[in-house]
Length: 73
Image (cartoon, rainbow, N blue to C red; front, side, top):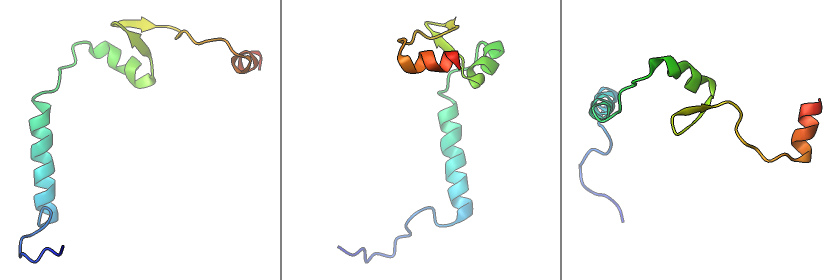
């Protein structure tokens, strides 16, 4: 079915779209949880794994032939 109304689809202009996105992000930010351990942020960004708030040095992975070959190489 064809839309025959003169209603603007989308934000209308680039500036209006950016303003809408900014307002949405600003509203979402108020519900984000604050970082209460800034010293751990670098570890998380580096890909460290945490379980129940504790750093996991080596995740438990099943030993397969492929992992043994990788360790030997």
